[in-house]
Image (cartoon, rainbow, N blue to C red; front, side):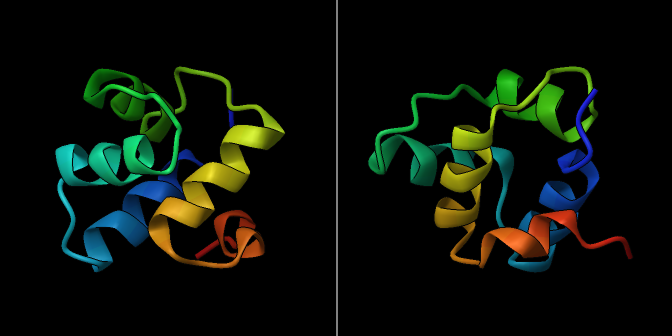
Length: 71
């Protein structure tokens, strides 16, 4: 399980990004991720490494601690 999945989804939706758009951003910064993998992260099915957390924050253009906020 991961703790950031729901927050990734909330931030992505707040930025009006689709999963495909976020995965494109990730791919552009060198994080090779598919839409189905992102869906698994958001639904807390797939574990996320510290490095991937940093890359997701970069792709979302947010500070990494925002991914750990509980709303």
